[in-house]
Image (cartoon, rainbow, N blue to C red):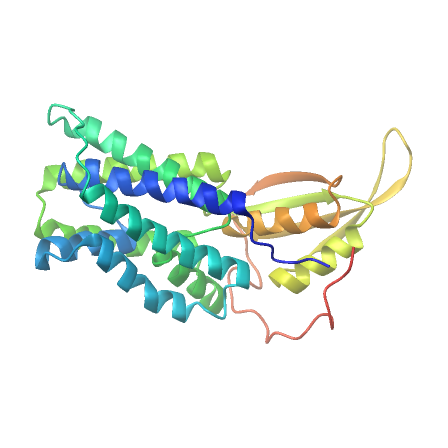
Length: 296
């Protein structure tokens, strides 16, 4: 049976990722008056507008989004998201009350690079472990599932809006270096996530492809296709499973495949454009595919 197991290793990596992300936010972004996108950017706005501690506002802002996304998140994702949000707030509180000197001689170029590195590596660790820090990730996922709008587009629009508001407390040069940090951040997350928000294609060869297909359709509500293939050496006929997923779903798909067949061969493909149900238009009303999850 495919179970959503909570792994101590995942929680540990999420903790380190949150600590690193919060460290960069406090000692690089805030210290050098650089803005930020997403819910974290709103926290910085509230800090400068109303002197509200980002540790508190980050936690409070994410509570509504977690409640909104409750039905979209499985038990495992929900727990990881709550844990990631709590850890981020915790480390924001700790770092703001710890004295650490980072001397970059007021060089905003270096500040932008370091901010992108800290944020990108920290977030990449969180995402690779199947977690999030809530906020705009959840809202983007809702729009993707309900309206067929890609997560990348939603996150971009949201970030542009927040960064525009940030001009109320930073000047244009600081905004330009903030954009540099955002660019570095996205590239680092792309590297660590192997694709970031672009769609990804999976080619799977396994003796248990029927079971893998059933579990992907049931747990992820994604369609799959079988291709007939023949091994060049063995001359044996096999079925190759093909599936297109959003990049944020790759971690879940890998878990399903590994738990069903640890020896499965998996190839990850870059998909530049996807048109069809679940991506470019609203999906059909959901119908239960199976009465229960497929057993191993």
